[in-house]
Length: 95
Image (cartoon, rainbow, N blue to C red):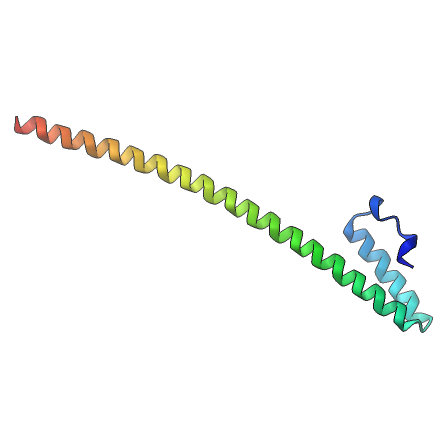
């Protein structure tokens, strides 16, 4: 039954809807073995979608961490410059 679905032209969401309809047809015709196969295909598609979303979220968070780290480095560099200037001012005051 899944062979009748053109996978390359459909999104996972569309594929899942089509498969759910086919699963309902299989159940209605008492073809429970086919319904189980289709259910497993639906689970696999949903699992792949969740994995893609998770990978995307991890990538976005990693990018944000990198941005935050760069901002932190800049802040630290500015603080070091200011501390060195203050240190030099104190040295100059002592002279």
